[in-house]
Length: 77
Image 1 (tube, rainbow, N blue to C red):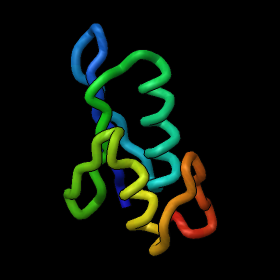
Image 2: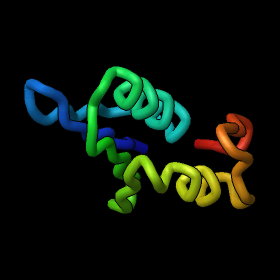
Image 3: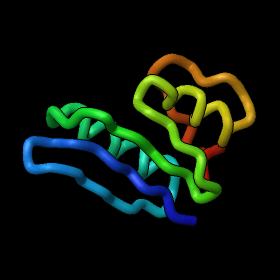
């Protein structure tokens, strides 16, 4: 499965690929920390999640509500 992470920075659009949702969310958080904006994760089925919806993505892949700031690696694929 391929997850795409897109963001904008001062040079333009950044698009990265990751093989798991956990890796995609980690990279998205890093991009936000580095000052990128409009950070989104696109799932293999085409659903798009912006940074304000990352908790919904965690819930979707784990099947249970996410704890604030927590990523449950056992249930993420």
